Length: 604
Image 1 (cartoon, rainbow, N blue to C red):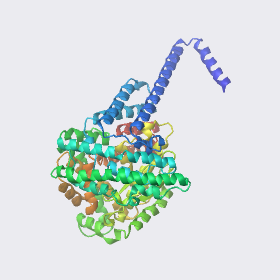
Image 2: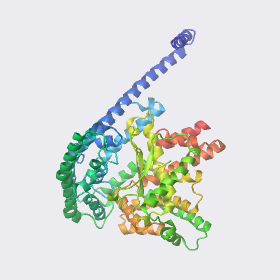
Image 3: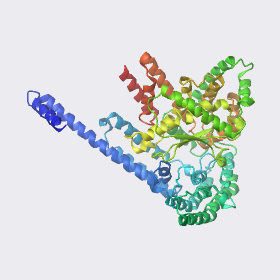
Image 4: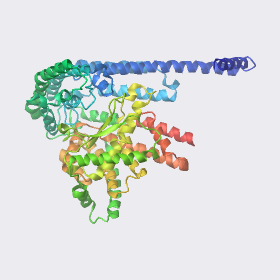
């Protein structure tokens, strides 16, 4: 190898001295450019690594979720002004550093990371002006529920060694400070007329009260103690039992009680009962516009998204009418919705039957998914029921990624609450979205990409991530999973639901829709039981703009596939297309579009 390299250099030098001065000059310039590229690439790697490490120090829960155990004992007061200032300083400092890099001189792959890193820092800085910290509690995401999930021993917080138990004990001791700060922030929110809708807090309070028990052994925080590993020494085990009993009794439960009391007695009377959207809060219009941009990675306006949603609702209704004809259903579309929602053949008899039905679908997916993919995740996944303390407000399904060391599998959480609102025809679409080839493929493959900077390995571009999940639901046609017209209806119903989200999310937060207006629109346009309609309507109130990401992302991925199929004809390779979409991890939709179009041009 050394000899060949030396010979190549010698020949190059010889040619440079034999009447080719222009080429020599060009070679020199090319070498300078390569050196500069390498230098900038190394600078960026250092910037990315340093940023990610500092980000984990500021947000140690993130470290725990990705399997980095260095900060498992830490729980900073991230609702505090000091913490928010530190976060903003971090974003500003690294934006200034990355802007010194000349992006035009970067190779394609490095330029994608550069653009995403710069955009994310700019979004974080822009978002810092909006007072999310004044409304820290809602029924869908709140720190009280998140800590309870971690405490259970079935989530990201490890409980394998005595040191693991000591780390979580240290975190538990810091819970009161965090809850006290949340209460202080909500009091400031009341003073500034920035408060949550009443219905959200009414749903959050029971979730918090569920963690208040007289018998410490009935607490979810005690569960890891009840399941102490056998290889922990007896002396350590006894010390853990004593320590946990003391902390849960005297620190954790009183903190949950104090938060519950404040929400019930002081905050609830101040909450909103007539308005439900972000747009009705002080500065809310700009706040919602920011949420649209952050969640969709587009510059689409609320009005434009509202219209896209209504157009999609109309189109999907027409396809549902085709299924009505196929199944020889007599009646109008609303009658068909009533039939699909209420007929007993679609209602599971038990929670366990529902869970096992979803688990049984896995074999069919595993046997057919290789028709569409030549790139697969290494991580495994399992299907679990949503915990009962949060199931009333949780979505139909959700996904939690595995840590990078695969020490535990990824989890597809299935909501089995109120079986009458979880029809069996929803099974295939929901499975494909949350498990394979949806979130499990996309998120796990992203985390397993060796050359991807960490901020991208563990980052999320909501429109891409949720757009891929919704696009994956449609792959059931390619996989032969929608031969049953009712499962096909389920796919259309799921897509319809995401289209309705475009209408109602913008309706709530931009057009001032009431809760009842949202529910009426849902009932008029989709097959939905009351429990799910209420849960979803209140989810949109709690997470402004997040629900827009699904359909906007899916529309873009589907558009790019249709365009590639049209241009490439018989040369279109679905496996290659999916590889192109997945191989760089989550990216903004504008970056994805450039990437796919470049691939199509190369095939041509």
